[in-house]
Length: 113
Length: 444
Image (cartoon, rainbow over all chains, first blue to last red; front, side, top):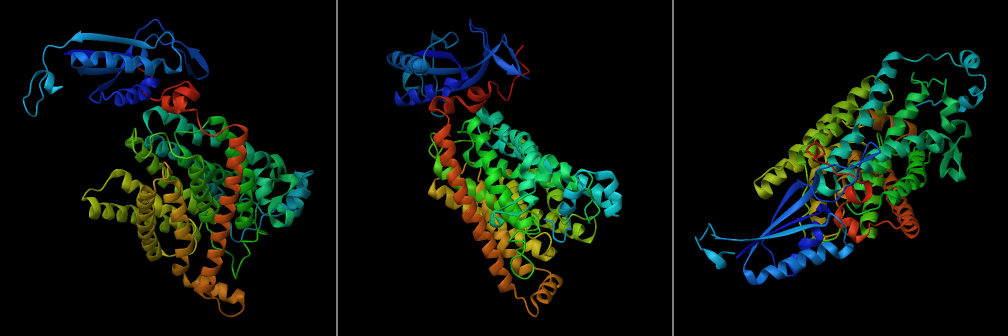
């Protein structure tokens, strides 16, 4: 089992979710995050452009069995890059996942995902 | 809105050149400080409704569209605010031209001709012009709820500018100018005290046409599109209620008995609307929702708007309650039909506006009916008045629907009304305005 953590641009979230659902990856956790990348984001505040050093991002956490890792990553990458790729598109981290428990039934391991 | 107003528009042309001297020579009226003070207050209260509307609508959309949606209201303040002073007032309250289709008085451009004129009600005409201007701002801003979350900003700007000129100004002229044909329909005119036809029916019907023409948001109705901030929506509804006292009680253009009557029925109808929506939801779902109460309050307020000058408190109670009932049905029906009038502009403003304009006939205070009978030279029945009301309502519906449809086509063919798919998914705040609504403070 692996934990796929993707950090993406907030405006790509809808596309990524659609792509994941199409790839039948339906169990995800989404949270708002802020962070640093190489990107220099630009926003306007009272008409002045400024580059905030902490940029709002969206973080997706997807726990999956090993055979679904590639499918998940490909869905995310293709959805993010759909409108052309640029600095700041984000990153995907894949970490080993020790255990998974479904609270309701007490199931453990791959079948609980 | 200004029954019995002796507008000094006619004089203002004469006064234009030699204002100070002629003013004293021709008009001995001095401003009545009480009336003027209330009308100034009302003008400010009606303006307060527009940020209120921005908050009401802004809270109902998804997080990524909160600023874009609030900008629809705020930009209306800027756009119509300018347009009204430049030529809107001249088009609405000038004398009949083009067979009474619209008004025109060149002296009213930039409000120059009324710089020194005092109306017979004892208020400077500038106050009246500004008071009317706020109505012109809020009406197109109301429509924005129908196509929320999916349109281009520049197309919206063009649309409301054109809409104000060819839909709002003519309707306003017909209903509220002394020579307007709906003002003079029947024994004592079609009753539209504060804007049932001009504001709510016109905005509601245009909203319905726009939502049908422009189509649904991506994913509607399958995807849940939950409000991002109901707290803000409730504050907005509260501001609307407060502002509505200026909207209705100010429309008496006086500070006396009529004002008190209008204020009372406004309060009662709003409360009755909120209460009955609460009750309906409790019957249906065993839960009264905050958005439901806010919707009921608005339904009551909209329904009493045309009626505030002629009905009594018991009538206001019934009208508020019935308005909630029919609006609830209308929104249930919309969900069945699955067209995307996103924030229920037609469901609330259109339906309660039509309902209120017709229902009021059955609750008219007897002194009004006696006066109408006297003017008709004998009898004037509620059925005759209902006929007048229905005519005015039909004219407003047909006119607003047709002209809005034409304007939608024009704007769509020139600029393109809908956002690109990519931009709609990203949200208006990011794609159009380069901002985001929440969390700016923790980005350091």
